[in-house]
Image 1 (cartoon, helix red, strand yellow):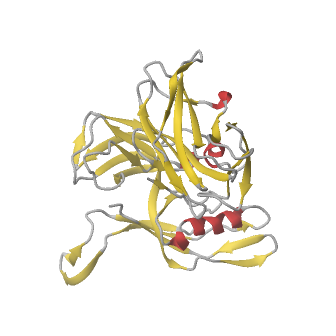
Image 2: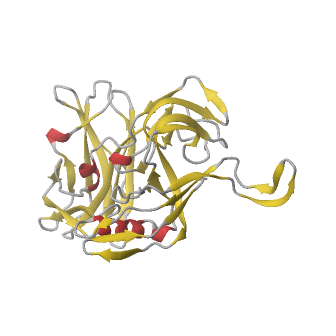
Image 3: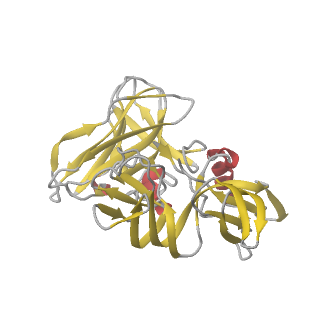
Length: 354
């Protein structure tokens, strides 16, 4: 389970940026036919981006977003996603890590993907899978609390608020304040903001929590009437900590008459201490990853888990979301005039997921 970060939309490549492919390996010798590599570390061409970045408005939140993003990705040491600025048809797109014979759902790292062809171990798949356009069905604000707690209600004897300066992604999160020493407090979806889902479809709900105690995430299905279906289903309890974020998740199949979903995140243990929630998602299939909805990849869900030891790849048209790391350049910006900060040129290299 992971929170997947994406370069902020306020950090934009300018004209003069370039991108292409690289093939890792070491040149051993040259023949008339061209260079020969002593080894080929990967069987795929990797994307490489040399980006001239647009100025950041220092009077708004752009610089803070960039700084916090660098904190989230360990100064560039951890992989993150970069959305290419133009739509195109992409071939041999890597969809997650190596198959393990248990996972059925894989990220399709193309935004607003169309004309999708799926491969497993190089073999084209004619049937047996579903392509979902988005891997997080929430809105950005409901998923990340960047502007408010709209869409959520307090759960149990507590109050909720948005706070900045603490987040699992972005700049803000939700804070839950118990009204006394109580158990079973948290957040739940407001009745007007329940999430539209398909009946008899597998989904995974995820959230990141920070605070001491035992936490659960769950859902309650509603018909189109709307009427609640059965009882709320919960994950097993996970222990949280005040020193970091813990991702919790629950995977199940919606009822045959389900039309919407109500999500709840709860601390089950009794305490008067507040705690924090961020990075909430409703994800098709068993993909326990969180992405910001506006830049989330699609998802490929198989009816049965592919055999272990292969790769899921795809050809698709749309905006490619490359999984990259910083390579070279200085992660800094310069001041050239009032009101704007100029990031220095950076290089990104695609990262292979294993």
